[in-house]
Length: 313
Image: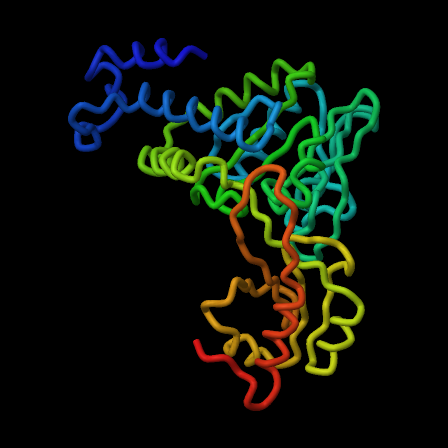
């Protein structure tokens, strides 16, 4: 889309903002045309810096992308069911059954399961579009390229790119013959958005100058697993793989309070008993190699677990 045409769309001033309540109209701002320009520029930057060939649609989050995909595929005559190893909350999608024969049912995959760390490459079946949630692999040094093999992908912009909360992507391959899916995606993208959010995302993407790849990785091995087990910590995620996080079970949750804020690690408590996900963020550019922080994580946990070994915050 030509940027000058987008700018021209806002030349009518108040007409452009007619659908907004007057209290929400800012002076010298043409809401809809300005949003269109920002979306265009943000998608251009993302495609360039992340090597994306898909057509991008900026939505609110991964769930927004998923529901848009379901409606769009339905218009194409396809149903979507979660894979057996898909992210657990997606199981509701198959609760009521799906219409049509198996040849019209597509599988929704989770590239990297956020609760287990298990990796499932996009399922490529002849004659069927591949659909993948790549939230945990998009913009990671180790898995980004593989994630983009899917015909259709969904992901947020708050994880590894670190661009914004409340924004997500739906990517549709240009080679995929799915005009109805694209039409539904266009409709979903055209809805009203939080203008400050998308504006700040573009400003941050411009400031980062391509540093939107997360090079952080945890490649835990058997020796580390045995070492940490003596302190009551079990590694549940796969070993010997450069994952963007590690899933651990901790016998004594108090250990977590001794991990310093200034370490490169962030911790999320999972729904399982005493289960946590440890991740991190180190900015890099497309093509950078993943940097393994597993030895440092093991050291931090061991020092926190042993008497006198806690680190000050």
